[in-house]
Image (tube, rainbow, N blue to C red; front, side):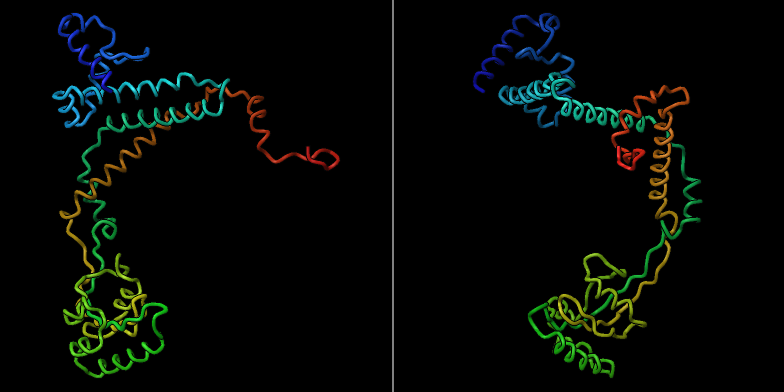
Length: 312
């Protein structure tokens, strides 16, 4: 890399000697091994760099050289594809062609998407709110609970014995025993025990991050203050108390307007792209060589039996 630094220093001296006129005449501002970067090309490359890279290249000759080396190396490597041919290595050649074609397709579609003019969706959003209220505005019921955990990890204890012990406690609670006292006496969940058994989390049915059996047990309770049947989980056996319920409800239109409009705009763009891509479909005027088609596809079909019953 020291050699490259010397070359760059020489280039800077040369540029100072020749002036801007000499720079304008030169075909490339960087060139090595027959591969070069024109002024315009390098300008566009630098525009793609991060601000930190641009600043480093502007202020430090060594950093500039490193970044120029990366840019020119990338171009040299990319030009290796020019050596590919369908005769020398057909598999690699067509793999490259199809990959390139896919990138080109994506690029063109992305440019089309940027050009789409999306109409004002406000009126349609209001209509969609009314017709699809459950999709956009429904807030499912949430519940908050407390529990007593009889710890029993798999393979560590007898689940049957723990269930028997927990059932006795549950019967006492349903008979009117003080829940807070039972928590302090029996619960083996340190986090909730310190808060009187309170599982300090409002949760939906099937809440992510909560063992499914716990939320199912919680949502099976009919009324606030009542207890679940014994709930088995990977942690042990739970007695769950329903502390409060936030009924399901619908958010007002103003709260979900932006989300509805965003979805409608995305839907509009998808349909626009679908229609636009469809405009490139094979037309009625297309030429198709039937003989060539048969030759290509015949090898993939089910072999046709010969007259004597043997496959062809």
